[in-house]
Length: 593
Image (cartoon, rainbow, N blue to C red):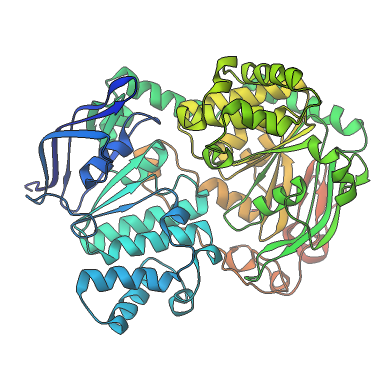
């Protein structure tokens, strides 16, 4: 069968004029995308992936000098919004927060088809249905803030489809999404290519995502394509040293040393023996208009441990982090810190400074108008400025930066470096609890490895506790002592990390683990659809009952209580004698799924 090239890029060069001189970002980059094909470009942050895509779309700024021997889409220059459309990583920044999503899609349809408003709205509704958004008529009237991250990404894909393009460029489209939502988006992209004949160019640092989707892969390193070929060649028989290093790092992220696992049970027993946990949450509730939030969340964080909180988008992870850090007030329940109820008065007394947060996007968390030193000084609020300035340098050096970096601005640093600065800002108040909310989600494998190693070093040196919020099971395996799995605002399972990840007891935990993509084309290509939780669910019954293949009749009528078996706590009727049958004396509970 003859291959027909849709996009042809030959010897693409991009230079930037800076105060320090001319900086070469891309050097002789060449790649093609065939008609109806999914091709991928992989590489670490700063390799030039996004720059190459923006150059193809003609969206680089005036400071960029672009040269290319050939740049053609079906023989012509690519036209953004017509022959080519782009889907970006941050769906929220791509959508107008003050305009309903139906209007945003319809406006694109109207411009592309030159049709009436009613025809455009009808097509917009069809597109929402095509990308898998249920009840599209109601969703048309909602604003972006009313949708989860996965649903917003579907809306952005719908807008791209409204352009009726020959090529869709997807730039890290699933990086900030959990495994369940990620599987839905990847299967959606596959289906769109198959049903519409549109070609897809995927840009990603996630090798699992690339393996799941792409037929052809280009490896970009420091602005140069160092290796290319079909996915099997790249993943199973890489020729270039950089490609082999990428694959090695991807595997390393999802491992935790045997030595650390060997020590884990002892450490856990020691922590439990100390008595009162550092943090205890009892039936915390927080309701939102869409029926989402927290529905009675209870958990404990022991002194010196790292507890991972995992779950899909909209499950309540970040809501709990905001309540714990004092950014948001709970509607009900109680939160205790060292045995004292953590109310507003206690936070004002200084206890609140003992709980600090590191956010997912370090750039938006830092004021771009303040130098790094000024940002840390603002967080420290020390009694004497000279002492505090010395403290700033000490904190920067602790996280692997230099004291001189205090005089530079956030824009001068890479994503991984900015995350180090965010950690330094959190540590300068000498906290006892560090909350990391998706702190490594948007970083490539090398930067993730550096941040995880840094957090492990800080935890060991400072003996602080950590609440590690993540949708990435690989990161959770690597860094946490215990895991709490949250679904629909409830904690459905907790236990030691090694045991939870190797032997899940709750059906939802098992589903999360099965949705993780490995950098292996044969395994990743078999990705299965994971049903997603709809907002505004029932008030009675287990919140997971509608998605559970093990559901009993009682699951739809009652909410399960939490059953305790040693270090494992699980909210599921499969572990209840009342609903699943009497057990023999001395029976040792094991997974029922």
